[in-house]
Length: 540
Image (tube, rainbow, N blue to C red; front, side, top):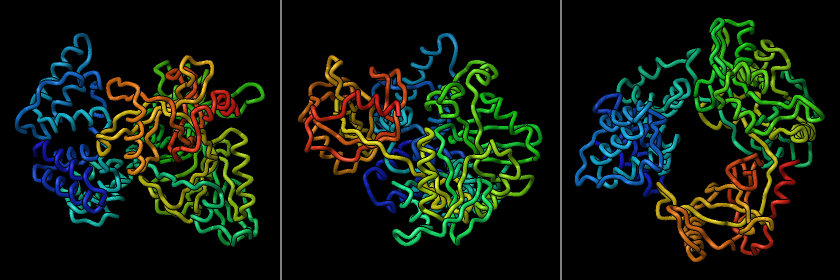
């Protein structure tokens, strides 16, 4: 299939808000790709989801600043584009920069202007036309004429929607039925929905009593045995660490991240713990986190960057395990010695997990039906320096690969009133609109009067994007590439999950998971929050 067909389908997806229309556009493209075989079906699914099978190619923005003139007509196929990207990904060593530049020129010289733009977005992670998991899975099901639930379960077990697309579209239901949980092959992790507070989380799970009328108050220890009361829930400490999916077969252990990357070699202390467990085969869900070991803060979590740097470091893992050890907290059990537990109620999985691991390797958990006890547990976790809690239904199966209704995370919400310093032009469905805003706090010690804390486009509605495009063009003070610098006048209220140390920004701090709540037209820039306030939050 021609690469242009994927580009056309992406444009159709970007041009509509209708989920049905998006699904139909993707399904048609997938069905056409499948006529050329499973490989091209997988490629079409990956490209329409905004991803590349190669993941890393060595090509970034700088490599794409001087592209050759576009071709007049489309000619490149999906397979040809993929082969060229494979060659780019394999380039290394002396002279590779020059060879890479030539390979980029050769590939892009075969593409039309629309194809060049789309491939550039793919290479830089800027495809955001709306064909994300929900649309892609529905489209695979429609193109293969299969129930969406069948496709979802296959994706959960295979770990990859693109792999499932190839199988569903060429082998049908029989091919998907052959996909099972395999120890050693990562499956997609279950994710948590969000709630603003404990009461809302309990209400979402249907466990809360009448307003102002707490339940009977039954509770248990973290081993999850039956509580007094009809509808208890489990509350778990929410850790700001690295999500791990742990696989064990005999003495062989494999550790996978949330994105299914294999990081086994980087965490020898986790491997040692799991290898010693009394099971021949298992799959665990866990979190690894670096905790402080000295002084009055002992036992409290390090900032996330410490754990993140431990995982990313290329230093000898044994040395890192001695200098920056991570602590493992398991919170779910998906397979044990030939028995798949995915469809079992959470209470059964938790009990099996507690029987298998030492208590210090289990995530702290409270089972209760008392909203007051739940709120107290939440407050204790936050006071101990953790992110909050995850509230879980004891009846829910493990809904891998999606935000299941059975898990709801609750974190304290922080907000700041900040000033917009610059804005970036958007891409994908936001092309032609000013999107990503640069956020600054007032700082009398800075030459500009402001210190940047990060960027975000999260939380913006279509109406907000249209409004801010006009607003910031009116405030434009200059341009630098795709960045529009603006006069520091517009105040915006930002919610964020926390602060982290950052060498990227001059204040040494950056916002984590920043999102726009609203623009504050009732405030002037000199009423925005200061770096002194920000530094105070970072120390709490």
